[in-house]
Image 1 (cartoon, one colour):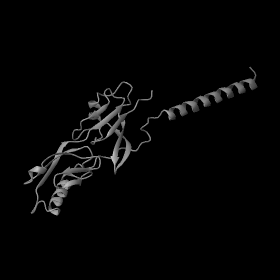
Image 2 (cartoon, one colour):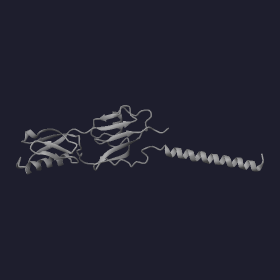
Image 3 (cartoon, helix red, strand yellow):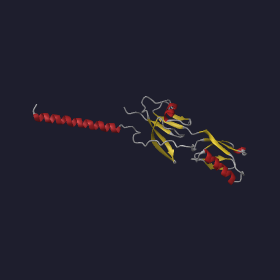
Image 4 (cartoon, one colour):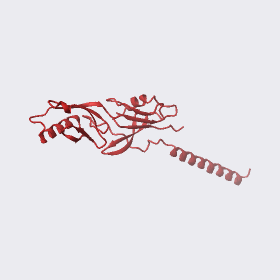
Length: 200
């Protein structure tokens, strides 16, 4: 083979190798995990739980038995109590709701003195798991749940699942915010967890 032919042959091989490398890189970039570009899920807020729509609360008002009972927080963010009618509770702690009910009872002249009100949870709104799990759906929330516990409740990962990282959609300041989270992240009531298919 002449020197000129060798140079052309080597040049063609180099060009082919470069093209293959570029195609490979492009394919890898296009197949990156859907969670790669998402922000990391913020830590669950410390302190007392804040009520959301769909939560069921148990309310007891001392010396006002007709007001005692279980109340579901409406989509509007309010609960309806006898005498008081509607009171907004979404985004409030149990203590703040107690204070709000007591203040309303005093303001409307329904009670005098210092009303004693107790508010506690009966059933918090569920969380959801979709995607590559064996039993996707809606699940009952338990205090202190992690992403791993939520996935276990949904029957565990399928064989196609991308494990270790999920997408969590959570309502923050009234808006849906989607972030990536690992298996040890804390789940909150109402969270929507998506498990993606892994890229082979």
